[in-house]
Image (cartoon, rainbow, N blue to C red; front, side, top):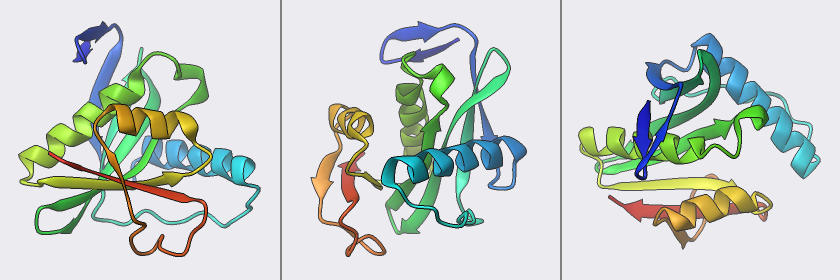
Length: 155
């Protein structure tokens, strides 16, 4: 059980994982396939940067979501590859993941987090804005992407 925004969710556990962890690889591959379907893009899989630290969320022992944290510069980190499997959506697990990555960032001395999501991902945009993230101008490598929506939050 983990508290998330005052809630207790039975059967949820979090664990740290490397970018090479099989659950991370499976979840991020599923995310990329879903995004390809949403945006009509069929792109080769993008490798995960080795300095991203992941948190995997399991629900009743099954990997149901993940989120990555990548250091960018002094005090600045980026949220990467946040994803909850479709079968586990609607349970507020994305809030658990967002709380976990923010806690990890604070523990690591980061003072600001930024992220990029797609402009068609209205649920993700609502989650981020409701969690205190504010829209920001696109940053590299997203500055020329018409499909990108960028956000940041001071911790």
